[in-house]
Every structure is written in structure tokens, then in C-alpha cells.
Image (tube, rainbow, N blue to C red; front, side, top):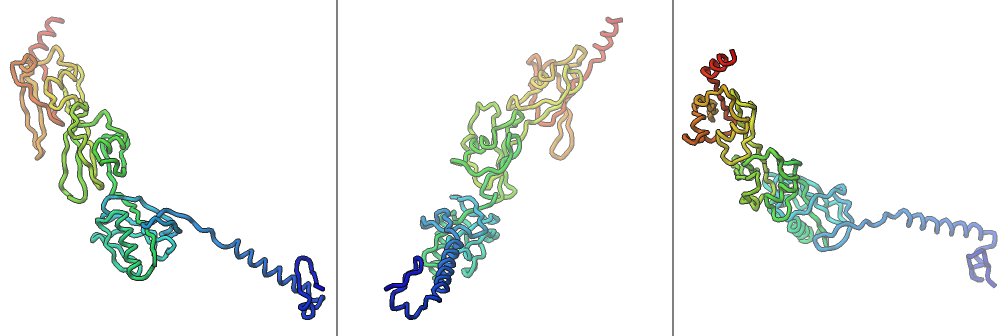
Length: 329
């Protein structure tokens, strides 16, 4: 004969040990223990699947406060912030800045040299060091970079100035397209500089009319700063139809006759023989050149090239003014 208590079965031999009056207590203890096991299972944290590491595995990415930078094939540079995520080992996951010497401080291993390595090669190096020092049997490492030194800064006469990741083959035309293209005030010079060679700037000839595409395929490297300069301005005053400031973007060599034409031409009381071009030199001094505009317009004299910030003054004619008053009087 067996003693039954709900779904709890107790063999006949054990019924001599456990008396019927104690069965309720035994069953309550059994339910309590079973409940604790269920609660413990419910409170167990779920596994988090993350990105693949250097070995292609999947693991917890909770290291480095869950922050991730960008994977890069470009060399890691000084000043950049790197995220080293060792999956399943948060004590070895860090976020730190690369020093001027190209090193980072790393737990237990000390200083590691990352400058010059890509994301993949840096991850392989860190994984190898962890394994070599018997810290982890099969470390899965992901290294990402969070910094502007590996990106390209675009400023000046573009529609969307900003900092952009290197695109495609890193060509200048690609970078300018990513910045929204050029504005109508784009000049004929694009300046490229970087921190690798401070004080050395490269000036590229650029044709705003898009007829000359020689500079389109020029390679722009990560960390470069691209400054698209605006058009130069020349100022026309005196006896012209529309005095004002005029852009020099229309031609690679804007001449005096072209600028005067932009200003609407001369007025009837102009003394074309006494037109002045005022130019500021690099040392701050000014030079004044008198030009016979009448001969220039009739092709009997050279048409001088107008430079940025030149001032053109077309003087009046006293004789024409007197004759005009006599005729009107």
C-alpha cells in the first residue's frame, strides 16, 4: 500500500518514517524549494548577442559602457579615442585616448602601441596579447575608433560644411559631393591642410564653371581639412552705371574691361583717360596705376588683370561736365 498526497508519492516503506500528520509540512517545504528554483531561473540575466569579434564569434558587448566607435581601415592616430571591447570579459573592455606617442594604457598588459594599426590589426594584436599572457583562452576583441582625426573636415563655400568620414577612394570630388556641393560663390582655389604637416598647405586650382576637372580626382586623406575659398572681390566706383563690389569668379583672369562691363559701363561724363587701379600689397602698402580706359576698350592698350580686393576708380571729366552744363543752359 502506498500513501498518496496530491501529486506527491511516498513509497510504503517511507510511510513508517513520515507520519500522516507531517505530510502537509513536507509538501509545503517541497513547494517552497521548487518555487525558489523557478524564481532564480527567472532572475537569471539574458544573454546579449553582440557584434563579431576578431575571431568571428558572438559575445556580450557590455564592455566600455556599451559605447562603440567606427571601424576603420585607416591607421589609428594620436589623439583619437579607441573603444576596445573584449566580449564576455568587461574587465578588459576599455575606452581610452591614444597618446602622442601612439600608446594606450591597458589593464595588466600595461602600454600597448596602437598608432598605425587599423581596427582589425589592433583587435588581433590585443587578442594575441591576452592569450599570450594566459589572461583569456580565446579572446574575442573588437576595436573601434571615435575621433575626428580619421575623418575629413570640409569648410568654406559648400552647402553643408562639417566633418565627414572618408568615402570611396577619398577623392576630392566625392568629399565635396558629401558636403552638399559648392555654392555659387565658390572661388578658384581650394586649400588642403592637416596636422601631420602643420604649416604646409596645398593650394589646388579649381574651376567653378566645371570645365576643367583636373583636380577632381585628387586624393584627400583622413585627417585633412578642405577649405573651399570664396571668390575674390573687386570694387568699382566713380562714373560707372552701377558702382559696387563684383565677384571675380567669371573668369580665371578677370580683366579691367570685364569688371567695368559688370558695373554697367561708364557714364557720359566719364574721363576714360584717367581711370585708376588701386592695389594693396602684401606688406599693406597701396599702389596706384593710371590706365587709359578708352584705349583699353578700343584695343589700343593692354587690358590689365584685376586681382582680389582691387579698387577701380573711373574719374569724371571736367570738360564734359562744363559742356553738359552749357548745352543744358
